[in-house]
Image (cartoon, rainbow, N blue to C red; front, top):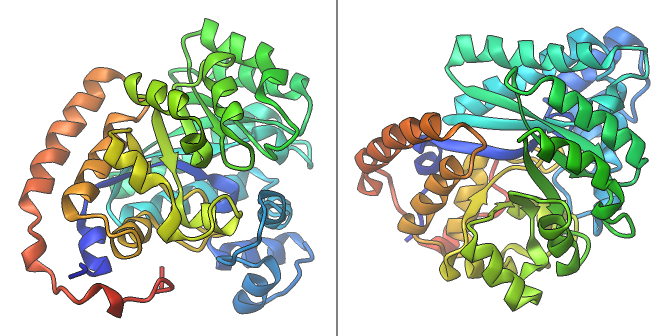
Length: 361
């Protein structure tokens, strides 16, 4: 018997791997383009979704990332960045996400001359105002980009250091993984580690376990973004497990980028049953056309994960946040109590096979 989406919407949740520029509302993209005179592939929601292949299997990470060429066009002003951040937090709060770590690369938002500090502060202001209005906590992860220069990654690391304890909670390396090794950006990682800033790195998505090994042992990653190909190196897998290095799994996105064949063959089920700290995330709410609730529902209906499995992965999200220990501990106490009060029997159950993998998000 499968639980409905409404059960997963009720659960308190985290989203630790979500990109600002991939998580806008489609209507907002169109509205910002209209206001700023920006040409888009289409001027209707349905047309733009089709043109950008939103929610579709694109076959590769490089193809998947092409949608960002469009979203970045409309995110070049302080007002647009504020709005994108506020609406992202609002949308997450409406599905009961309690804590979120929003990542983006400020250097990609300076085409119209915005100072990097303004790019950071506009997003922080949007997240803080959403917290006041909806109660959702959110921090920023600043990204370097693999396929841009190591010098630009160092600049992003310097920005992360400048905003440490002011809303920036970690540093990440994103972008095209294949043929762009993380070790090329060691100076950036050295700087953030010297300043006691947490590190997460996209690895093992479009390249093999060697990429994960490099992220952990050369760059000092505390979490791994995706990690789909970790299963190819059993020794490294056990190292990740033994050291409680969390995996930021994004199931639907991984299918759409071709990192895994389909949801049923996603390795997160294996990882979870082996004891790894698996967390469930959206990656890109717009580009992937999803929510955290939907991703959890899909792990339940398509991967046959039990309610107990789901609860453990939800708790893993709070455990794996980059919040200070005592804040995390306090949040966890409240979340565990709340989870205990949510009874699956209060929700209508249906045979698993009656659900569609493409239910509205």
